[in-house]
Amino acid sequence: MALLEIENLTISYQLKNGELRAVDDVSFNIPEGSNLGLVGESGCGKTTAAKSIVNLLPENGRIAQGKIKYKGTDLAQLNENEIRKWRWQEISLITQSAMNALNPVYRVGDQIVEAIRAHENISKKNAKNRAAELFDIVGLEKKRLEAYPHEMSGGMRQRAIIAMALALDPGLILADEPTTALDVVVQDKILAKIIEIQAELKSSMVFITHDISVVAETCDYVCVMYAGKVMEYGPTRTIFKDSRHPYTMGLRNAFPSVNLSQMELISIPGYPPDLMDPPTGCRFAERCPFMENICLEQDPGITAITDDHYLSCHFPEKYQQFRDIAKHRSTWEKVKERMIEGEVVY
Ligand SMILES: Nc1ncnc2c1ncn2[C@@H]1O[C@H](COP(=O)(O)OP(=O)(O)OP(=O)(O)O)[C@@H](O)[C@H]1O
Image (cartoon, rainbow, N blue to C red; front, side):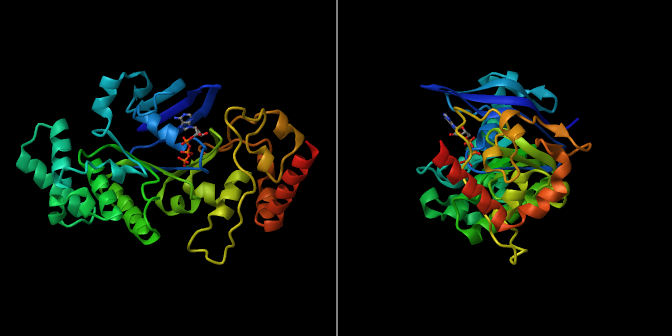
């Protein structure tokens, strides 16, 4: 049994003019002790999926369908009181703006101590020792426990938040673009630290990012989402060595690995569709270089092409040809031309 099993999860937001499905029939698993990278452009539903796991959806959001099984318990069925016991102790969420979550009027160390004591019957002294250990793990000096949030840099605050997220030794860490708000050098350091800690603690992690190259080195599995749906999902090696979805290929061009500096950056023209009015067929069709009529008319659904590699494309057999063509800038420029022509026609 996997640690986390997301089954056919659908999440919708109620808006004045209707319902928006931010996550639409999404499934993936995380085996115990492993990492999954949830990847896709902004607005694809990654944050919504993560928040739903710990029942932190905004007021207008709801789980319309599906299961979120953690150690066999369906979290989607729990009420707020019940989920509170799981949140943080079992599953902790680190978000992009987490560093602003620290209370400005309390010393950072005291906040961690209080947080630990709220969940565990432990003396103040022991909780303080634990906080000091955690600071050591995340690379902060012990004396920083005495600091107020405004006395720390952004990077330090984010490290403190990570320390807090680890305080109760959670089985699962949800890291939602945990370093996006920081400068690039600090980002790399913190990212490396998170991965190191996760490996040391043997906890599992969902790592959310728009940058597919980041997950290549950090995650065991990759789930590529687009417009609320899973486009491709499988072990990282497979997704990188044997990409089959044109969107995965496009993301790899758009976020080349830093180790492959000779690779040129080619962006995918256009934007994800409006989820208030999603396309009937494949959601990526409009931006896909290999789009055919069937792509506009029918949703390909998602199928297992091997035991652990899932794909949502009408042309699973054409991957070799797609891969060769998708490497070239001209391929994506043609998509842009097609879009411009389309706009003129309609
Ligand atoms: N509270 C909300 N009410 C209505 N729609 C929302 C709400 N939060 C998110 N959405 C919509 O749900 C969709 C998915 O958003 P979500 O933030 O989950 O995507 P994401 O992939 O995490 O993007 P980002 O990387 O920008 O956070 C988007 O269309 C977004 O506009």
